[in-house]
Length: 200
Ligand SMILES: *[C@@H]1O[C@H](CO)[C@@H](O)[C@H](O)[C@H]1NC(C)=O
Ligand SMILES: *[C@@H]1O[C@H](CO)[C@@H](O)[C@H](O)[C@H]1NC(C)=O
Ligand SMILES: *[C@@H]1O[C@H](CO)[C@@H](O)[C@H](O)[C@H]1NC(C)=O
Image (cartoon, rainbow, N blue to C red):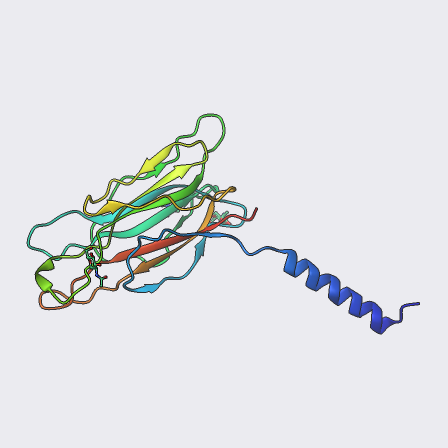
């Protein structure tokens, strides 16, 4: 017969088993992101909701100025408020149009992404020019349609990330903070981004 002490021990085991079976949500990444700046906070759509569209803020090419290209990514969640999430935001540029996964009868949501990145500057030769790191982002939707940022065109597109079966529920961005104007290090703003998949 179980006494109180051993039954509470089994209860504890059951709770631990439940906690460990609650899988950590998958995170999707790409390998061509930049490496400047710190990772920002994980922001998530409200519980039970996922990302169905995005908007970017880009500094479009301005000759003779320190360009930073992609600065900010805003994800639109499919809750009743169409909540926006951002993680760390950049500091300059113009907001581009909102792009939603094209949906007909079922709501389509984003499942994977690719980044367009200007190759990193890797020397001390400052004549190598104005670095901008991430320039643009594009997503694949659950209905295989692609939504493509109205962004900058320096650099090259990297490979698509792995896919989130149930969609994208969270975002972290890596943004180099503004480091001053003329005579200061070259600003690049958004360098990299990673997304947390919705629970499976
Ligand atoms: C939507 O906004 C209302 C009013 O601010 C709030 O009460 C509600 O919790 C929000 N819904 C979600 C899913 O965040
Ligand atoms: C989310 O961003 C869009 C596009 O900028 C804006 O129109 C909308 O008002 C924002 N929604 C909220 C809840 O702030
Ligand atoms: C620097 O970049 C060049 C051109 O992309 C590349 O060939 C070289 O291997 C890089 N060097 C280092 C140290 O990363």
